[in-house]
Length: 201
Image (tube, rainbow, N blue to C red; front, side, top):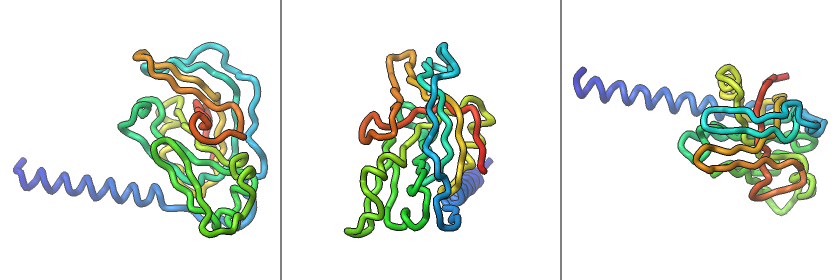
C-alpha cells in the first residue's frame, strides 16, 4: 500500500468516526411532559459476592433500577477508569425529564462530572429538586452485548437500566466508589452501575 493510499484510508476512517460521533450525540426530542415520573428504585443487593471484570473486583452495594431521560452522554477511552467504565450517562427523572424544564438549562459533561447552568436568571425548578432528580451515572456493561446496547443510546432518549450499584477495586490499587443517595452532589456523588439489563421503552 502506498503512502497516498494509507493517507486516504486514514482520512476515511477519521470521517467515519466523526460521522458516528455526530449521530451518536444528535439529540432525540420527545414531546413535552414528564417522561420518567418515578424515582430510581434502590433495594438490597441481589448479588452478594464480588464480581470480577478484567482487572477489577466489584462489590455490590445495592440493587438499582432506574427509568430516566438521557440528558447527556460522554464516552471515555483513555482516562484512569476507562477500562471499566467506557461511558457516563447524565440521567434525569421527574421534572428533570420534561422538555419545558430542560429548556431552561445548559447541560454538559466532562472529566467524569455532569454539570448544568441556567440559561438566564430564572430557575425553572429549585436547585434541590435538580440535584435530587438527576445524576451522573458511571455505567459498566456486564458483557459485550450490553456494551453495544449502551453505545447506541442517544441524548433525549428514555432508558431503563437495571443492575447493581458497586464499589470497584483494581489490582493496581485504583478504587471507585458509588453513591448510595440521590441527594448528594459534587465529588463522590456519581452512581457506579454494573448494568445487567437495558431497555428503551
